[in-house]
Image 1 (spheres, rainbow, N blue to C red):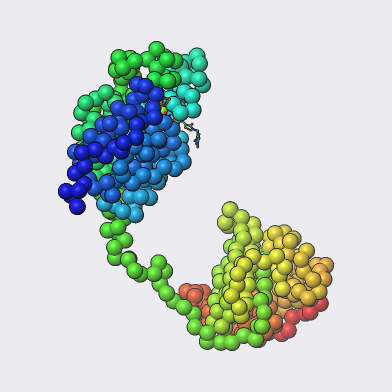
Image 2: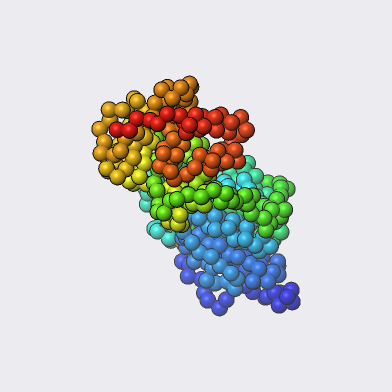
Length: 446
Ligand SMILES: Cc1ncc(C[n+]2csc(CCOP(=O)(O)OP(=O)(O)O)c2C)c(N)n1
Ligand code: SF4
Ligand SMILES: [Mg+2]
């Protein structure tokens, strides 16, 4: 409805609440003029405001508005733009919010998210009483820099320009061309940022004997250039994401590959099975095959792994739950059976070992034959079974032995799961080992 959207003003009847002479009023008037020039349907505008005096602005406009946490307006605006790339998104943010949300600034520029950011830069935190911000100039007096600011002010424009912003401009709230700049910036359909220097008449002005004249002088002193500083044509992110994902629309994120129930299991209730070994000992891949074997047997299965951040050293533990019913909680505190393959696994298994009862099972190697436990202990001696090189696949061999002995999941289901889920040569090795342990002599039961 373009006719209806040609409003003569996008302001409502409410008066601004700002202190007399505050630069925010000027910027908002310029924004209103720009919106009139753009003539956009107010329903297609999103004003995202940050926290601070400038953040009060959205109440005075006829447009959609979003007001959130300090420094996060650019993140909200990114989300809004991603949901509806055709919206005209404007961000009103202070110098305080720009510093607090610095990482959002970099990422929005880097991605070239289509939004027009008005940094209402008055060199201090106005709303909270005039503390210094990332743009307070050297020597600037604020309540937190009483002897003069020692920090170098952030060059917001240079920062976003070097990080890929499409349109970058610097000027002041007094610049008459500001409405046209806002229009041009918004029409650039890119990440556009205007660093608008202005006066905080309540704090920065009295603390520094500051004025419109000193604002212009300061610009010279800092050597920060003004006007249109950077233009760059890059794909706008929200649209680029849509285009890249268009082919995937309506398709599942992962290929649907359900495992059919080809086998059966006598299991009537949940069984918690923990495999504890060493990093590099194929504990997790063995557990995955066992979980898939359970699903192939018509059960539900859940797997939760634990290993140190240093992936190739230390322990590797997999908690498995097999159940004929839906599994609502995936953690294991008390295993029904614990497979203890190595010393590293034992060291990290104190809580499982402590939780074992006379009803539990412990499947382990001759190394731990003398371990004191109330559980029913089964020592599996691969050497005695004539299985050479068993240590490489220890977690797998002990686990399939255990499940076979317990009669929960058949060897056939384990073979089928290995065949389906592993590379051919790996599956072959796993199946060969499985046949040896399942067909081998019974292990010693303690
Ligand atoms: C995460 C967080 N930190 C601090 C504050 C407190 N706070 C509210 S307004 C404000 C200063 C705002 O300064 P600026 O962004 O420059 O806006 P101005 O008031 O100058 O327009 C601060 C620090 C807050 N609301 N949230
Ligand atoms: S405190 Fe400063 S920024 Fe806030 S309204 Fe007053 S003059 Fe404006
Ligand atoms: Mg400020």
